[in-house]
Image: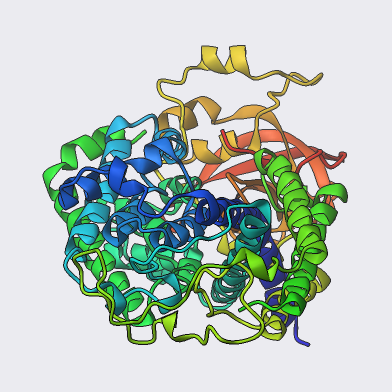
Length: 307
Length: 296
């Protein structure tokens, strides 16, 4: 084995364990919640809580992360079970995409990373929320079967008398944990491999992008995709990754929590692959476009956020 | 559908995952991977996963009678929601007459068998635990900024920092040298105001030693560095300061923990401003409880 191969194996193992150890408790928490929700939450319970107007319901769902803050790993099994229990899919999608960004923990870490800048926090949370709501609205009229996996679709109108006991909740949790844990592990393997073999933010390629927001923005979203960072910590990386301007850093912080290599596999426990690819493309275009637009409009505010 | 055997096998796998978390926590190897805030979470998660695994081993399947609803609905029934419901591949086509009834009957008959799940989850975990050194190689650290100049918009850089602030906040050693945090010396290179205060300052820096790859044509340099981590080692960044040794100075070994004293200055290489410590003396020191500088 060459030194280079040995280094890559060592680094890949280290990266894998770091993400695995950090993410697994959150996956467990998410699946535990999902298992108990699936057992004890009455079907269509959310119909009574959410606004009747579907767009208002999507907008309200996008704000749920502020009340129930969950990271991007834990939210997937939760929404999967909520959808099965009749939570509108468009609302679930809005919650899933917004929650990792629109929550107090992410807000505080972004605030600290960007020199106590309310502007950057507002821009990040606002854009994350806006995109999540837009995606939710976009799928409002699409037949669920076209993007939901069969196993994730809501049970149809007939009433099931499922046992509401601990056994059922624990069995649901275990099954969800195994399903989601498997895809999570595959995602972490892919991320670790890419990070140790291909992704290197210190190369001249990245440094050469610092003066060009149009090229740097998609490049930074690509980097966020492959790095698969936690939304609570990615602001520290964005702040220090190089002398990029506003748009690339904002795009990095908005796109990453919504779509990355490990999430790709986690999402596949809920959505069909074709839809995931379309979602990836839509998020990429929306985030990139809005980030560049925001940089153009709010350049002066961004300058004031610099130390 | 999960048979009792599958449930037990999955329960056993959950037990393995939980034990892995507990092992990393108990052996304190966890501190090489996660920020301190997450250690308790790993412990709690490990215990919870073990409980789930044990529960599933003991109670692998619900009683058949627990799922006694009638499955006589036909699939042309009218749904009470207004969207089109795509039944292509929908799992309502399972055979309800089968003898071995599903455990909690939530119509989720898709999933992966235990063999695939074991192979794709447990094998990578074992391989990673076998090959990890609980740290990155020099190549890995270089990819995370070990030899990079600080970004101009550095992390939480202090505003309007003065010499008086320095005197108030930073303790001195017996030699009268400022015991400066290594990251402060590093980020000063990205802030002209702070840089002007630190220029020529006698300092003592604590960190681990790496070979120097920048400005080391004469072979008289090494690098002192620390790690910064917000959540896990995957988001870790490395910050380093070049150490220039006088000819007669004893050199530390690579990976050794040291306290390096000398004069802090700044140099420009390839249009980048980098911190440089002109070493007076380097002494070995104990590795701190956690190598990571934690979230600010």
